[in-house]
Length: 339
Image 1 (spheres, rainbow, N blue to C red):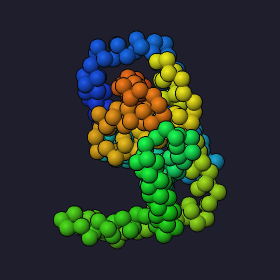
Image 2 (image 1 turned 45 degrees about the vertical axis):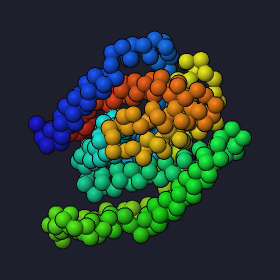
Image 3 (image 1 turned 120 degrees about the horizontal axis):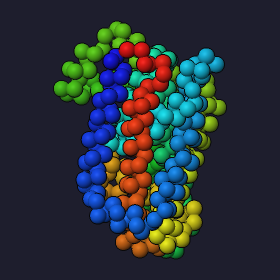
Image 4 (image 1 turned 90 degrees about the vertical axis):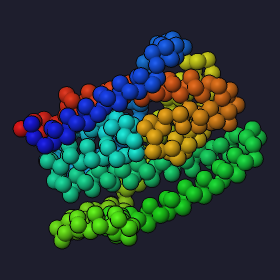
């Protein structure tokens, strides 16, 4: 078994352990009780993520600049599988996005080379973060304009603050795209006591050149491929908007009718609170509280937050299982079964 497949096997084993842990924590009775509440709706709830994953794949593919030969080696379907399995790893990684990205780089490096694979994956990771702030601006603007008379004043003020912070974050990220990200990040690490010793040992001339070359592909994206930059941002933001269909269908399943605007507001508040608690695997307990608060904001009993939260986790669990299975049986694509 070669190194790439060994990495896949490790991710698969970790995924199985986390799935077992999640099922144990969720509890068999809670699982059955909540599945009974939604009945056959659960299949539609799980299927709603098929609205977002293709757009995620298209956004990533847009930033990969594949030529015709590379498109044959790295097909759309292969990147689609890597998108799902990469997100599955991110869901079960204690600190978000520290598992799925290395996995995707390992999967792509044989066909694109280390530099291209790294820049492709990291460009998409940055775009994923950037779209988060764009989505939050949209959500809080909708909250202000459509729920102004319903929400307490402190939520209204908080919404304005979060919009301002999101705008500042977007400006900072775009500025980083213009000037580079990776070299500056490693220079920052060199200023941190104790950590600087570890990082300095890595800073060989070859490693510095790799950082510079990879950083150049970041700056080239915004400075010379502005069309692809905005196309990817649009696709990634649309995927976030379409992901709101999940909470819409969940609430419909339990007899609570809402519209797409309410669902965007709910997901905006929930995702913000969940990202504040990003250090917890799957934001255990954090998301349920955020969901209860978000539901109350649009006039829905907060008590439904527990039910909706559990159903959301069941849907996530289903996609984690799908992603983990893809790691095992479609590990890194046919080109890497050579060892």
